[in-house]
Image (cartoon, rainbow, N blue to C red; front, side):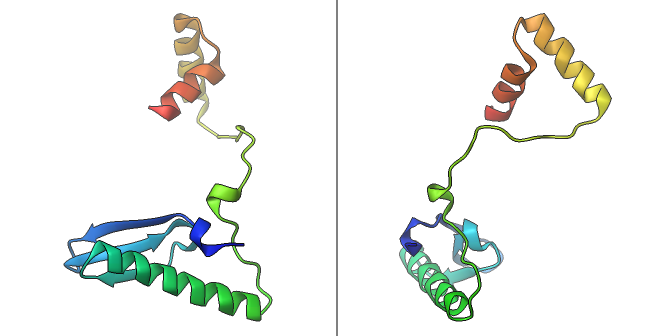
Length: 107
């Protein structure tokens, strides 16, 4: 497990007037800094400390999103009327419901 494989993002926080470093695998963690570079370094240090603590206490550490295998399938529950409308749309376009839903999700 390499913490550098986690998904990091730096964005501007208007509320704080600083850049905020975030990690998708640890959604509750953040780090504020004056520069984007400092925000990234800060969140990486926080994640490293949390992972070390989790390992020391025997907790399972999240797998990096980049290292997960995805099947390409997931189930979505929608209201019957939405399902019907999507099926009609797919039929009118001459494509399968899966292809239509995939295209809409990718847009």
